[in-house]
Image (cartoon, rainbow, N blue to C red):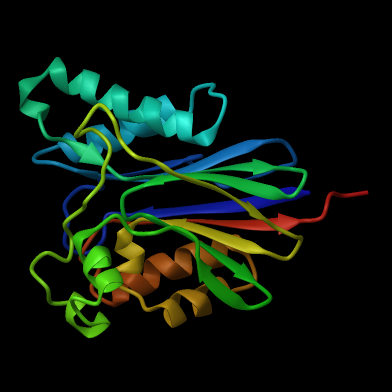
Length: 238
């Protein structure tokens, strides 16, 4: 199998800088094992932007598996923060996948950036948000309608850069030609409903889908940085 992907990122309508980082930085095609990832930084001043860039750089180096890449990213942020007290407390999410041409994606995930799969027209959220709100929803403490206005709606329970040991969600997803995947920061998922995401992912090309998500998130308010990587699984050319 091969993959074709498109990358779209935008600072949104409120923020003055973009603390999201993405890899690869541009669209492409591959029939080889390929790593793709989205990181959404957090921290005062430029710290969030630095944390997400450090995570992408460290996770992009050679490693035996996706979870090891995320662990390396966590340690790289912590080590960098030790050299500059002004960066103390910086952190980032990281949602990473590695394409296996034999027919699967291997995921590693920390935070509330997300991965979705479109299969036969159905949208499936592959990752679990590591947020206070997600925990409340799982336990039934609040209703889905309450999330949008809850004061803790953006609070993470897990992120890179905060503790030397971080729990990483790791899993494999089998795919077939015709499937489409999305990696995105919460600038997409917090602004758009699942149906709105599904409709944008129904666009003909990855490029149209990725920029459609960015445009719709901005149209809905663009309250955060917005990043989307749309990945199509295609048959290997004969």
